[in-house]
Amino acid sequence: MKEKEFISSMTDILHHWEFNGCVSICKDGFPIFETGNGWANYENNDKHSITSRFLIASVTKQFTAACIMMLVEEGKLHLEDQLKRYLPEYTHSDQMTIRQMLNMMSGIPDMINDVIAGQLEAELALKPMSEQEQLVYEYNTMSRPFTLNEVLMLVNDKDLAFPPGEMIRYSNTNYSFLGFIIERISGKSLNEFMTERIFNPLGMQHTCCFPETASCPGYERTEDIIYLGYGRDTSGDGCIVSTVQDLSLWLNAVLNKQLLSQDSWNQILTMVPNSDKNYWLENYGFGWDKTGIWYQHSGGDMGYISFVFLSFEKQITVAICENMPCLPLNEPIGRVEFAIMECIDKFYN
Image (cartoon, rainbow, N blue to C red; front, side, top):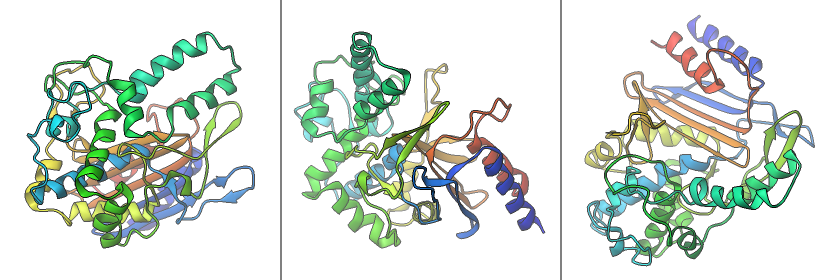
């Protein structure tokens, strides 16, 4: 009876918020709710199925962190090494460690939200556009295939945001650099390394590091539905395309601490508290943050939105992928993912 009530409540939530995407929720490794909802392709009226492939954007970071720890276990990299050992081209590479980068404590400016956003603001002030034109232009400028040289050009002449280790500030550049380090040390592309070491061993057959292979484009919801297209980021901060079922395989592997040693998982999931209590990110591990009993991370790019959650206490994993934002409802619960998690806590307390 509880299972039927839970499914009914979940279905009502997705309908209420006009959810456009897929959800997979597992308990003890088995699905208790899976669905595809809304439009995969709005123009063609193609509906989502549970196998729809989405860009998961910054959820990629926890995969990049796991790959770094694989190299640590093989003795090819050490967490206390300075960045200059692996990426001497970066101006300030003698000031931060690999661990500080994983924990978002390096002080390296965010190439997207600091540097490119600042450039865009100055550029758009001189180039009048309609609201829709500006939105599309901003997305396409901020989401593109970044080579290492491009990333270096964006941040090499910038000061550090703070002394490394002083606080936590979310920066995509940390994980972009870490992705390039994986490629340098392994001699393989990020897709090859992740496929061999994570995707294939876990049976994640619909997952890769090629954003253009998503089965659905991204959209923005304003007064109209605006087509944005497909993601293009190819670096370790946000390049993975996956399905919610494949993400559930990954989350349950984390829950069971597969692929890596117990010590490596302990380091990944150890939350460092942020000394800046006014910042939105209260803590950070290696590609994860945590609220209460829930380890979590989110991602967003080109209209795609993704969330992953897991709880060791409840033995529950949650994968949510969207290719268009939900309705902006003026409700205390705030956002659809909060409503989903509240529903889980209600039925599986």
